[in-house]
Amino acid sequence: MGTARTVLGAIAAAAVLAGGASAQAPAKAPAKAPAGSPAAAPGGAAAAPEGWRKEFDEVCGRTQDAMSLSADELRALVRRCDALKPAVDALGETERKVASRRLRECRNLYQFVLDSREKG
Image 1 (spheres, helix red, strand yellow):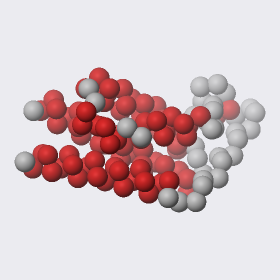
Image 2: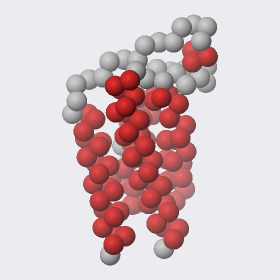
Image 3: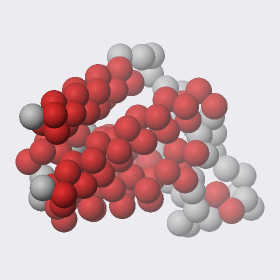
């Protein structure tokens, strides 16, 4: 019973975070990296400044379905969260704080559900 409450609480928290970020004013687009910087190179942290948002929305948009996802899907989402972290860390201060917290909470939820299945 305690585990079910914890999982439901984690899902509710993720849902609040998911809704909370979109309720704010539209985020300003991140500044583009100078042409010679490592972040501007293909595969760098900011290789596609607008692309991180799409991936972020796709990854964090699955939190409400976390309990119905397979272990493989959960592992893939955790990997995608980890891969997205450098792009989020390259954002401006305010946007980085919001996006990094939400990404961390999404990843933690997926990992929690995965861990709870493996223990049970």
